[in-house]
Each structure stands twice: as C-alpha cells, then as structure tokens.
Length: 144
Image (tube, rainbow, N blue to C red):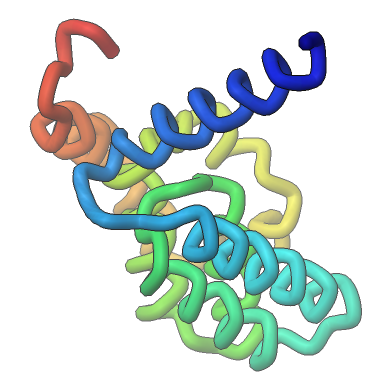
C-alpha cells in the first residue's frame, strides 16, 4: 500500500506541475526536456558551447519556461560564442518566463567575464519591467 501512495503522489506532482503550462505537455515531453538540458550542461562543462546552446534551445521549444538556470547557462553558452544578441534575449526570457531573481542574475558566475557588455547594464536597468511581465503572464498572480 505504501508503494501505491508514492506512485500516486508522484503522478499528482507531475500532473500538477504540467498543468501550470496550460498546454498538452506529456511526461515524455518533460523527460525529453530533461535529457536535452542534461546533455546541454555536459556540453557546457566540456566547453562545447555550440552544442550546449543548440540542446538548450531545443529543450526550450518543448517546455519554454521550466528553469531560469537553464536559460542562464544557455545565455553563457551564447556569450562564449560571441552571440551577444542571443545571450541577451535568453536572459530576458529567463526573467520574463521563470522570474529569475535579480540576485541570481547578479551572482551567476558564468556571466562574470562578460559583465562589461553594455546589454548587462540595460538588463539591470529594466529588470523590474521584465519581472512585471512575468507577473502579467500569470493566470492567478495573487496566488504567486
């Protein structure tokens, strides 16, 4: 009986998590997302930034607002490839879609080498606006 409760709890947790998106994500979509982000992180650690960015971008096509850290690592991959426009957009998406905290943005180590890029100051100036866009997109912001 204990085993059944655990399986039921997991199913409830996953279905509740997926309902947040108000789309037809399946467990296999979530698994594919996780596989791609895992692969992207491995490529990132191996400094294969082109492969890392590609895997992250494929994952975001499956589930576009799962994890702010994933967006930040994807952005760091783009920065290492001198794709500043892509990097900027990924950071903005992290804020607008996942409500990535400003403190996390300020302390994310992978950005340290690139913080003198002008767009970092621009993002910092507009951080509150991007976060308000996140709240505007919520179905029930008062609950959040």
